[in-house]
Image 1 (cartoon, rainbow, N blue to C red):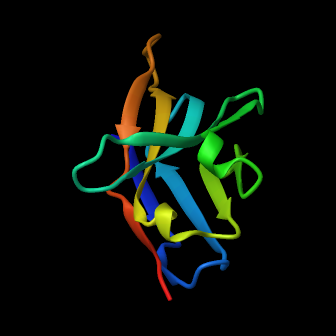
Image 2 (cartoon, rainbow, N blue to C red; image 1 turned 45 degrees about the vertical axis):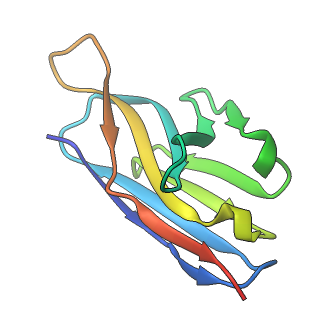
Length: 121
């Protein structure tokens, strides 16, 4: 069984920075896509950023130039560096990874519990 442990959320003032981490644990054959989504009550969950096994990244337009996603394959960990935060970035941030388990050919999606980011003065 694969588990994701997220950390790094909290309260920050507008213009501030936070760094989120998400570590995958368990018996994993490989990880394909790693990403961060965010959820605001009453709104649809949206993709913030993702990074493939080849290092290619994808960002939501609203965070381009402010957020940077990176992965450490040796640690099965994905990071999200968030700079110049805005009140509109307030949300629960959820980690999502596509993992291949031993003996399996297909990939499964795993979600973290979420970490809350609040941007307020």
